[in-house]
Image (cartoon, rainbow, N blue to C red; front, side, top):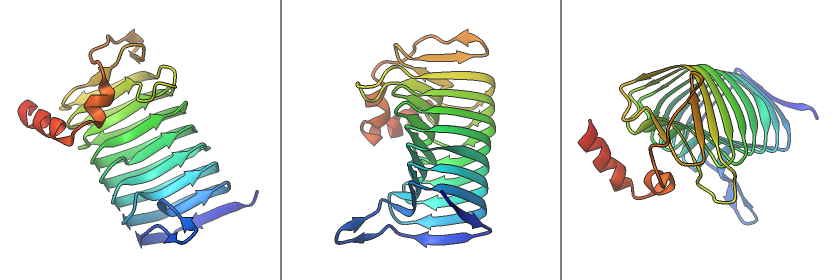
Length: 231
């Protein structure tokens, strides 16, 4: 397939398409294609996702995502590389990956309203040399996904740095393999639900939470009160 190439492109103030017979979730959507994005800035979305990549092969280099109404970058059933990408002020998740295989290097995420990185539905993801700062939840691996992280700093994340659990019962256990991790001033360093795993510096961490689905996806007032009482 011929690649869709964006180089030195700035796109601001995006909305999804909503017309009879044609509705898109993301302001910018790539579907069933090959993608190369480099030196771009995507800012201000007014719909569910700022950008969606679906059933595609992609390479993303030196990109900034800023001020998304919900998720910034949603990747579904795709395969690709992410290098030198910054996220600022995502109202929900900054990077949401499902059913995909992704390798990430030099990722910086600031101020994610929910999860900085959400990995689910049998995904395989590697992340290195990155920073996750001032978000509610740092990184989660759920629903049969396997995430390997190396040289990551989790700083000042309100609820938790990393978490491994099941949200959907039809999927197998999830895992996180972590090395050279810095936890600094997070609400909790990790949450681990039974039958899932987190290995930190070759040591298996112990289960410390049950029913994370309800805790992380239940009433928002729960976490507002939790943050207030635990700061």
